[in-house]
Amino acid sequence: MTKDTETLKHSATLHTEEVKEPRATQRKEKAFVVKVGGAVVEDEAQLARLISDFSALPGRKVLVHGGGRRATKVAAALGIESQMVGGRRITDADMLDVVTMVYGGLVNKNIVAQLQAAGVNALGLTGADIDVIRSHKRPLKDGIDFGFVGDVDRANGRMLSTLIEEGITPVMAPLTHDGEGHMLNTNADTIAATTAIALAPYYDVTLVYCFEKPGVLACPDDDTSVIDTITHSDFTRLTADGTIAGGMIPKIENALDAIDQGVSQVLITKADAIGQEGKGTTVK
Image 1 (cartoon, helix red, strand yellow):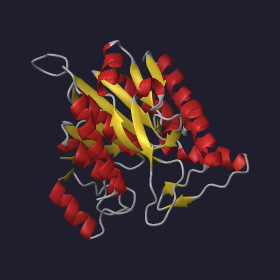
Image 2 (tube, rainbow, N blue to C red):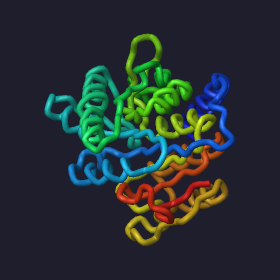
Image 3 (tube, rainbow, N blue to C red):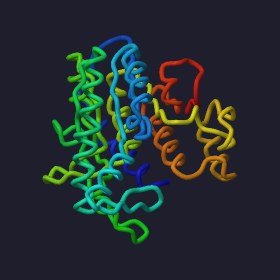
């Protein structure tokens, strides 16, 4: 179990304790939480397709985005070296300034503007805005100091649902805060899962992780080898034999925990397939 997964379970418990009188309906309205990676939001054509497909999703929705490649590019232009360990960004004070500007400003507001043009009344948020996601600075892990990186403590589902009920579509940047005036760089996959869990008492939530591949692949070089369904037992087997490895491991751990904490469905699919039945990998 990774630190992100342990923190996510703690987050879900805290949120459950805070839930007060979810909307009283016999049948919950459907809602989507869609997480899209930086490779999509930083490509003009792919982003335009995503905006169109996301806008067409029925019911309530939230968009969570990355932007790591853009942050690396901007940091390089400013003479700031990007350091990565195991696919995770080391975030010192200078890099924190960069990711705050890029994630919370450049990338987030570009997406918001394009959603407005598509008729979606979007509102860009970091975790600090209306105290929607609070976290703590990650402690040393295997002797590595990740710097200003946040592990999530809680998400405010009641506040998010209030915005959503007013017809607002939150667009979440991968930034949180610690409640003591400090911003923290935070994994977007974890933010998406935490947000979906926080909204589960209020809506019938589908969490969608979309990226450049059509799903979780049995053979990394074969885009036709999509694994249709992954359960807890499948995950154990597929990680043991090396089929699932690297950054896909914490993504599926987040997905499985979301299912355990009340999210109705989790899909891992290609960005241009959101909303399409039978596309991608279903985690359950």
